[in-house]
Image (cartoon, rainbow, N blue to C red; front, side):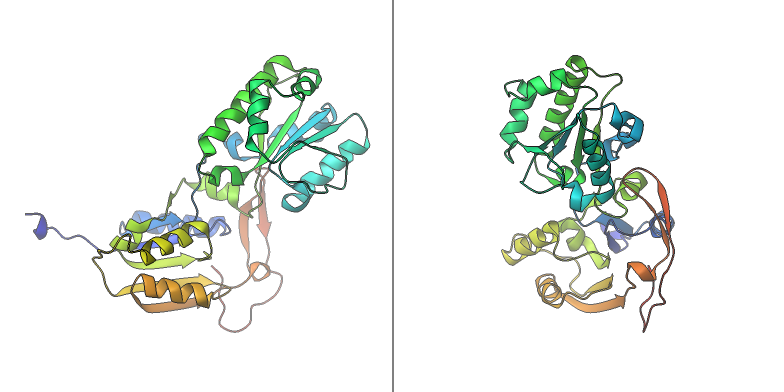
Length: 312
């Protein structure tokens, strides 16, 4: 009797983390009104959104608490390029003296003195186990600050790294000279990464979304992301072949048109109909975003768009 039931064709909407809160709310209303619309994100994220402190620069980075700290640990983050405002705070604190910055990651110039341990994950493991010489720095430190970026949640071993960092923070709170409770500060380099995480924990787009959808709608999403590239490679290797819909509709909305990736995508997934909607750039848009500190920022349109480009 299952064949007598009507199954509507779903339409998958793939989002990027740079879209504004207004667009997120409109899409949220759309999916609640029409159940055949499915919201997905283009890249995977193993982020725990139960508490906002898990994806924010916490209050431990204000001027008063940063002045009381003498040690900062940067875990795979380059604040000079990913967060210039944060880098200025650290540089200002370093110039006042009695402040040490320890970096676990690539070797780069932060415009102030810092100590680079290594880019190997085994260094972090040795710190958690207490087998590293720099563990003495944590014991003798005052209100240490730990900063990482949101990219660690896109790794395959994100849960293991998160567990190690939580264990490290737990031991720092036990043995260091800390007035309060330390947290891991997460620096988000994407414009609305925090607002996107605070909105909803969307699923990552997968091969079954392409297989069961009559149309795919990409909003400001790139075909160059690692997840979409992986799906394209799996299709080229004939990893999944059965499809319900042969004549798929592809809608792309963005300020640029990636012709080479688009051709590969249309050929791999049997897309016969394609519609491109030219989108305005950041300076031609007005919107609301939540930055990495949790503050709501309102962006005003600076210039008037030309041609047929429209806002989100």
